[in-house]
Length: 224
Image (cartoon, rainbow, N blue to C red; front, side, top):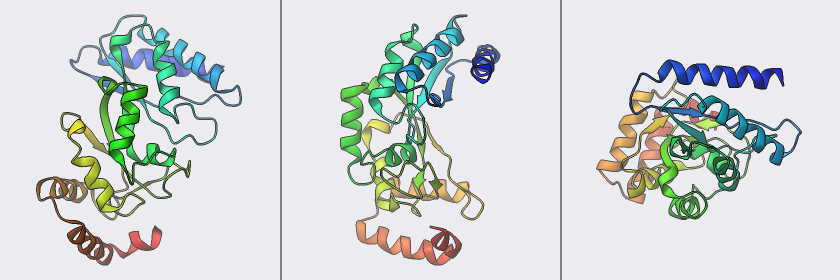
């Protein structure tokens, strides 16, 4: 309870600090129920959000899709929808879809991203989707691990990354990398992402590129 109270205070203070900025999204992990059960966890998360928004900042809160490890809440679109349903200020709550987390939670981000978005639409509505965390996944679908991988070096491979980036539903959204960058820099991963969108390489070209990248960054191949 003490940790939860400090977290709500911290969130409230953060919103107050950034409230002078315009068009701000504040992204956060919903939290964990730590053994109290998902229903109680959702209730407490709703209360925390409502407390933080009670001073009426104009900041938008984004709940991040989670991998579902341990007692995490938010490992399914349904859990996020239930949290959002209990938020008082409906115009200030949205979702950030993390591609690694969503894949690790069991959604077919690797093989049918369009179907994942169709499910998102049916459960939450696409108007709630405000941002993307673009991350490959070290362990893959339904692993519940939440271990990010460099683009193309995880379960998504380059084809999966390309499918995400070229989906028209995401064209207007901010897309943010949270991948490892000690070997393959974020600058180079961003260049790779832009190439996947602008040049539209074929499946065979993607296969050749994966071989080239694995030869250039053998440490990543061994780690994966």
